[in-house]
Each structure stands twice: as structure tokens, then as C-alpha cells.
Length: 377
Image 1 (cartoon, rainbow, N blue to C red):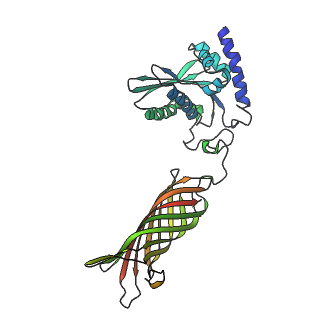
Image 2: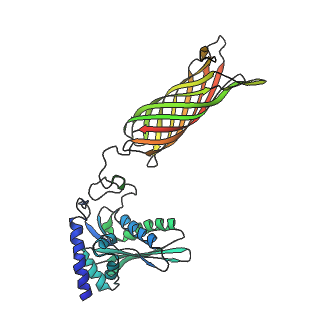
Image 3: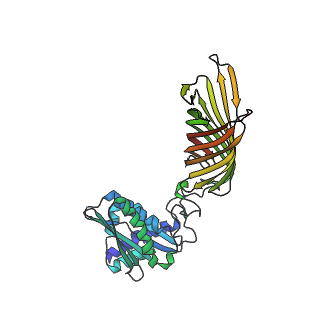
């Protein structure tokens, strides 16, 4: 009995602190959390790696806390008050009466205990859901894993299955959309504070700039003009949803001193600039939360050629009539702030234009580029 009394006195302070908040300014439980559950630290047997097991303890508590109806008291809360070694002494009991007293001191109705061990190259994880009022196990399960990564995945899946035996737990919040206790809608990415509307989302005004490098090739009747090219693109539009964006865009690819190839001959030009300019309307689909996107625009394009002498004076210019052109974009962006994203994209353009002669020839142009992008959402 003296041991039980010590447990009760020390852990009563834990309950009071959990009810008042862990620290000044700490998030308070939301009203929806009605069932209290203690998630004890993972115990390890054999040659378990301490850091891996400590990480599993944090993961286990966070997975249980994904249920909005549960208020979780984790092992980290106890260590903050009584220290790690003292906690092991206090929580090392296995008798039913000791568990019941421990649960009573914490003010919880349920406890989750766990153990992990390694046998050869295999991880063994055991979880138990204890009914504190009856001091009996409501559910038990064991999972195997053959790597650290698989152990993490199995831990998450095992929690989902274990809590099926606890109807009061309710459905879990989807991973990546956890709700902080202080403010519904908050996430770990915002430090536990509910973000402003539009934070890391595609909504409202859409601006995108691209600057890159690639190649440009135009052919007509066996004659080809090709070379390395710089590229620039600008898009302005509106985000219909977090996934769909509609926009208008302008783009240009410019090759200097391109190679001229005609039937039976090839030469490197000097002082010649070869450009492909286009304008179009398009749409982009963002795959969230990966923030990768696939876009397509259709519009009109125009080829231009300008020749200068050694002094930089324009000798001759020429251009085609406007013709149809399509532009395909595949890219990935990373959030640099609440609304700005930086990334990279692969662009491919294909157009068909005719010159302005009496018997107009048709030019087929293809451009490609790898570009740096800056996007405001």
C-alpha cells in the first residue's frame, strides 16, 4: 500500500497540470475530447535501440491523439514531472490493482501499454488496450516488421486496429490534417496555431513566373533551324479549387546563332536570333498535398528571325503568321511562405505557323525547357 500511495500522490499533480495546461500559453483541450486515455511509454526488451523506441513512444501517442474524442496523457507528460528513472519505477507495476490505482491517479478510463523487441532481423510490437475500471485487457495484438520504416508503418496501422475495440474513440482525423487541441484546423506545420485562410493552399489570385533553358527547333520542307534556347513564361489566373487553376499565359523561347540545316548542307549561323512567342489559355491540376502540377494551354504562336551584323545593327527581320500552339507543363513546387511556392518545371511546346509569302510554307516548331518557377497562390 505505501507504494500505491506514492503513485497516487505524485501522479495527482500530473492530472491537475494536464487539466490546467502543460505550460503557460499551452493549447487547451477542445470540448470534443471527452474520453481520457493514458498512452504509456513503449517498453523494450532484448537489444532494442533506445532512440528508436523513444520515437515509437511519441508516434504511438500522436496516433492515438488523432481521435478528436480522446484526451491523451503520454509518457512524456509524466517524465516532465517525475523524471525518466523515477517514472520507470512508478510505472513498472503489472498487477491489476496497481494498474487500477495508476489509472485512478491519472483520471483516465483506458490505458495503452506496449512493448517492442528485436529477434534477429525481425521487430516484434505488442499493444494492449486496458480497461482501467475493470483492470482487464480489452484488446491485444502483435505485429511483425523487418525494417525500421516498416515498424513505423505497422505501429500506425496497429493503433487503428487496437482502438476499434474502443467505440468511444470515434473515427481518426486523416493523417496530415490533424487538429490541434487549442484551435480546430491547426496543424503541426503552423506550430499548433490555426493558420490564416489560404495558408499553403491554391485559392484566389494565381501568378506564376518561369525562367529556364532548353532547345528550339523549326522545320519546313526539309530545312531546319535549331539550337539551344533560353525561355521565359508568365501566367495570370485564378484558383477555382485547391487543385484546379485556370489561367492565361505568355511565353517565349529564344535561340541565338542557331544551326541551319538544309538538304545536302549544314551551317552554323552568326548574328541570328530565332524566337518562338506564344499566348494561350490553359488549366493546371495540382496534386495535393504533394504540390506537383500538370498544366496544358492552347493558343497562338509566331516564329521570328532577326539577323544582325558584327556591329550589332539589324540587317533583316522576318516572321510567320500566327498559328496554333500547345504548351504542356509538368512541375513540382515547395512552399517558401504562406502563399509563395518555389519549384522546377519541364515545359514542352508544339506549334504550326505559315510564312507570309505568295505560296506560304508551313513551319513546325518544337521547344522544350527545364525552368525554375516562382508561384503566388
